Length: 258
Ligand code: SF4
Ligand code: SF4
Image 1 (tube, rainbow, N blue to C red):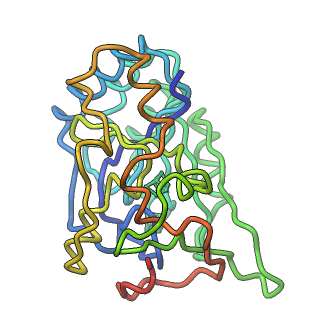
Image 2 (tube, helix red, strand yellow):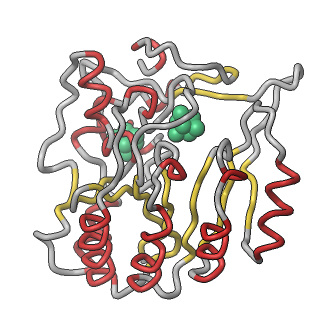
């Protein structure tokens, strides 16, 4: 079965991380339309017979979407037994109204807070979640000797000269399957490459062989077979050259991604 699937509720973010693999620092303000969400999630549900391990609602920063809780009943109806998780940087989590927490509880939506070097009250987040009976966890990151947050980039090759099979074989984010506008992508990089191309006037070309159109396939098997194979777009990824460093804000410089 499909292990997990990402859906961007927003593309933009209220944090600005260098080399963000979802290209959020480069993204214009975008809020997912709930009708598009409902249509696509129902199609995914139909194709997978409601079998999905984890559904991640993320971005960008999903809490920036004012109608976020309206997505919960639709997602829960489509996937009654799936672990539905919001991934947030936590910056505006404690600003959420009681109706947000009650909706998380009611539709069994969990929260994963990515811990950045920000002066946020993570204890208060845990306490608030506990008060409302909501499951909340933290994604922490390895630290350097100076207690700086490790961060890295998965560099792109804008000329597309890599051997795609080799890139795919060494890719550590290839299972971040992403659903966007009726199409299922093998990774978040591919799903959001339009932001990179727009910002830097590049043409990392996506073809019809790089994704699956959920409305053009008719079986769960076809879906599963398509997402486990290297795709032509992998020629743009230098996956053997993962570049480790420490976290810093993005300057929107192309070198953060290549
Ligand atoms: S918080 Fe996440 S989505 Fe936002 S810029 Fe940082 S890595 Fe990207
Ligand atoms: S395009 Fe291929 S190699 Fe690049 S991140 Fe996606 S799955 Fe990995």
